[in-house]
Amino acid sequence: MVRGVNEQINGSTEQGTTNRCAVEHTVERRVLRSKYLKIKHRIADEKDDISEVDSDKFESIIEEVDNLHQLVQKPREQIADAEILFDITNILLYSVKAISNGGVTPSDFVGCLLRDFGQQGCESSSQGKARSLIRWNDIGQEICHVFRGAPGCCTMVGPMNTELKQRKNAVHRKRTRPTENARPEELDDIAEAKTDTDKNMATMFRILTRIRKVKLENLILNRNSFAQTVENLFALSFLIKDGRAEIRVDENGWHLVVPRNAPSAKAIASGEASYSHFIFRLDFRDWKLMLTSVGAGEELMPHRHEV
Image 1: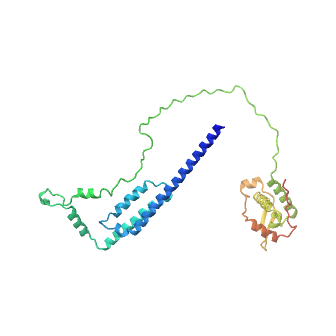
Image 2: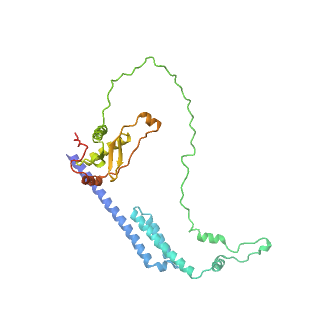
Image 3: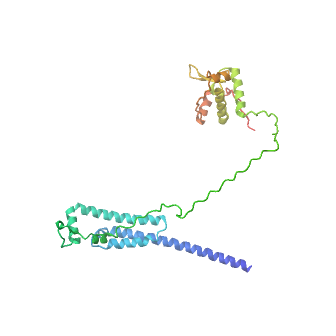
């Protein structure tokens, strides 16, 4: 009993510790997002000072953003970090455009280079020992912090010290002839059971041979079942495919179904007769419309009761 109480106390302690850690983690995330929001307001308020040449606001903001970036873990924090960089970029872009509109020419740029990084006492180029007028090494040291290593990926797959596996020699086994002759067991002839489609085709063909000419709607419609109407249409398509039925259109535009004698195998082999299909659109709305065009009791196909 004492052991059970101790286990329960330990479980409660662990659960309490887990909940406390989760709460502390949530608080840390909120504090981080609030710091990003504070920096964003600071950028909006001090955007004029950031673009100044002699101002250190830009460097201080970048350092603070870099420190916060080390703590980013969640997507919302990544979005906040990206928005900060986007705002700073827009401010610098506007300042560059403003300077460009002021009329800085290439000659001004070259003059600044000569003023800040030029060197005196250069020998003439005609003497063969010409020296550069600009201290390019000093320029490189001034701007080296801008150029950083770009991220890349390693394209090598697998270690370099892999060894080729020795291919084993194939061992061929001798084939042995069977000593006993196996004779399969003969089964009795089993008549193939007719499917529901075959039964529907037989029923429909008997109706056609009795009436000789019927309307398509009266032949396939089942007033009590949309599914059986589709099955009747399916059976009619097989009768037409086999050449045992034909659809004609009279002068009034009615589709009439008449029976036909199926072509012989010789006629099909010679090409005198060929199988044909037809496309018929039928959905639930068409079935509803068909109910109004066919009078009650004029359906020819019987209703099938499912077991």
